[in-house]
Amino acid sequence: MGQLELSAVTKSFGTAQVIKPTNLTIDEGDFIVFVGPSGCGKSTILRMIAGLEEITSGTVSIDGVVVNDLAPVKRGISMVFQSYALYPHMNVFENIAFPLRVSRMPQADVEERVNKAAKILKLEERLKHRPGELSGGQRQRVAIGRAIVREPQVFLFDEPLSNLDAALRAEMRVELSRLHTQLGNTMIYVTHDQVEAMTMATKIVVLRDGVIEQTGSPLELFHMPCNKFVAGFIGNPNMNFIDVTCAGVAAEGVTVTLPDGTHVTLPVDGQAEIGAAMTLGIRPDDLSVGAGEATLTMVPEVVERLGNQTVVYGALPGSGEISAVVSGALPIALGQDLPLGFGGAQAHLFDAQGKALPRRIDLSKMHLPDSAA
Image (cartoon, rainbow, N blue to C red; front, side, top):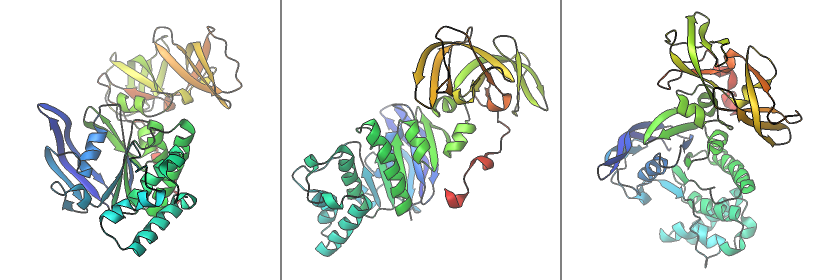
């Protein structure tokens, strides 16, 4: 079990409403990631689910039971925080066993659960060590083990990897994904790092200013963002945005005029008026050096060599900044014009309010079969 539902949930501090009325259904076994910029409300929602923050209005239900008035310990959830919060005088075994000791569980059951969690988290050889003798990644595993032994219906993670270095973060992303596959529990994870969201989630919830902007699978949000905010937040490097003008609407899609006066047709649906100001979005990975269906001329200013690929940052005369991901071996001369081609089918189009015009792509062909997910 582990289905969770938020119905018209809000949170206010005084007269400031930080979480607008929020409705969200999380299915059993989902790995949900709340992502968004600092201050968007993702941790506040997580804390309301956990019972650590009072709900101003609305209801939170777990497996059909409203838990608004239940204490955190009675909600069937376990939470892992940004700080490890381990007891330095206790060894790993006792740190993991602590919630079971509090509930006065028999010793035989304690040992069974702790040893099972230690095996899952590869901590068998560390059970007699104290936290001060562990690496950051091992300490985080101990904190996760303490959550596992409670056998909760829902796991909550509040930016658990933010204190780790880059290498450990990558390692722990894999470990958490593997843990989700092994346990099958519902997991809700908060982060400001969209890379963590894209790599771990079965479903991403993008928040801004206390409002859910879009919910969907990582590929849905990447290929079909609902607006400029989601399009710019998901993907690394960020999507390029270019001011364009609508030049025509036909069965083939919407034709726009680029800053240099050339035209390109995007296979999108929706309403657009000729002469209306719009925004074209193109991901850096979808730009290729040389001419294309449409061509932009970039003036390189910064080059990042990453081995098999190179990220180039520069200026698009008359339209601000632009970035492109190109071959790692490609010679790039700073200050010299670099032509970048792309096709209309690769681009996104947004109206003056920032709303995306739906692209004509078949997302089903971009997803792995359910049996392989």
